[in-house]
Length: 254
Ligand SMILES: CC(C)(COP(=O)(O)OP(=O)(O)OC[C@H]1O[C@@H](n2cnc3c(N)ncnc32)[C@H](O)[C@@H]1OP(=O)(O)O)[C@@H](O)C(=O)NCCC(=O)NCCS
Image (cartoon, rainbow, N blue to C red; front, side):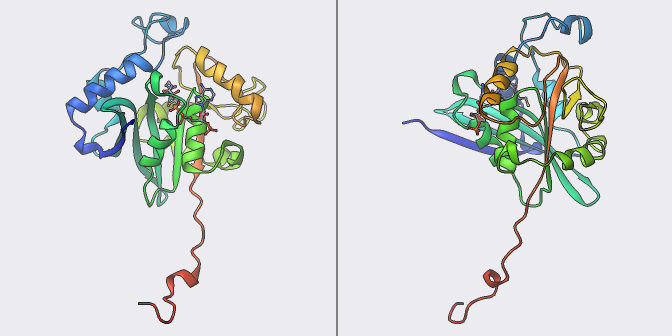
């Protein structure tokens, strides 16, 4: 029988060995550079070569000093099958939890591990969740873990709050991402709806295939995916009003 283990760590408890494993997982499974990358990103970004992240870069960009960061991972039969990083910050008294990285090993995809990892990240007190991703499956997973379904998201909430939330981020790539799409500029006729220009030229073959597949069965709300762009999804936590009768002990009970 398969043994699946989810673990969550505060950023301050993430060790070098954990980051070494996370670096290997990312570098072997995240994706490959697109043909535009070499020209625009860096001379090391050769088209078709794997996007890599060293453990030092993971520490400096995903476990930020002085910021509340979390790391969750899932192992299957003792092997690292997926992981996620998140950072939290405060804006106007609300806690924003932003997924800064999510990767699942190729051999373990499409069996709910991304949803499981994001569920593990959830914390009481979080008011807003956000993610930037080119992969529709990452958006589907976030919508499921933090809301209910991608078809129920509030585009109005994203439209009204994306800029202030992202500009307040301690994470550089979130702060620097430029909002794009019809949601933020009604004159945008590129087909983008809720996107960011991150200048991250990762190959989109796999995400575009996923997008085609997803669109066959639902009304995808986040629009097209263009080179160098990613979707942005921001969700407000829905809190059910607590029924008063639940907190008042019934006569006869303790
Ligand atoms: C994106 C990624 C993390 C998804 O991981 P996963 O464990 O396969 O996702 P899950 O099994 O939890 O699936 C989440 C949802 O996406 C759907 N999905 C997963 N892969 C899909 C695919 N290739 N095509 C279409 N839908 C897909 C699932 O059916 C599920 O939808 P549902 O809840 O409506 O059934 C994984 O594909 C990955 O690591 N990709 C490369 C890195 C990347 O792009 N990361 C995102 C950057 S933040």
